[in-house]
Image (cartoon, rainbow, N blue to C red; front, top):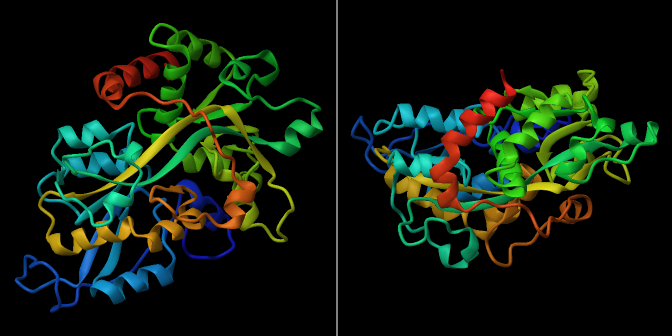
Length: 366
């Protein structure tokens, strides 16, 4: 994400860490909505998890087209960011919230965080990701697949085949190798749990987690710690002397390790267990009580423009949702396409999420 510095932080940023996305102060005049001072704001504030990022050129184009500068306020994980917005409902920190996904969407909607707005260009967004179609409280922005990643070198050195499926992860040969994120605080952590619900059903997923716990799974608070400290296959993990060669991350993680490596390797050093993947859809919405509603609407329009959508893959390492948006070669060459990811219906997530998280916490954290 976006300092463009070739550092461990920059590598981490691609999927769930830092993201210097934009800058901008509040200048008076222009087309912004009136703020509390009575002047019109030239700044639109985006509230997000830590992995939001966009290239400087694209953000400058948004400013050129609309007159607004983008200011980004970031929390750690999506769950933490959403919790903060719920606590400040009606008096939001910003104008637009980005990063609520299908695992947490009903929580945001049930709390009335968003003002309905039908973004310009929404007709070019794939119908299958428009989970709030008709009401337009949120706008789909990207998709990604939460999957177990593995350290290729570790498994080659051990002459051990890497796991491919959920079933593989509970086998004795993979004992004490996997690190996952806390489902109560992390969106990829929750996505991974939902993947096991989809795979084993309401009557089987808890028994699976008992077996996974017995097989030595480690749990940390969020993606950054898991991927950049505990995982032996990432650049950050190597520096931190991480000793877990399996981690819950994304199908698009391997290109990160290629893009920021010096010299650039011919093959990605990490792989994806394709039978462990859960499909995430991320949304943005206009926050109820936004001080710059006009700027927020303009930003939502921009998030589903081809300009932004084609900029996302090598900044946030996610897939665009707009029809015809092109993926960069590095993303397609080193990323992994998941043809049949696990999914759970949004209404089922809404009905059961809190109970699932509580059950998981009781099983795994105690």
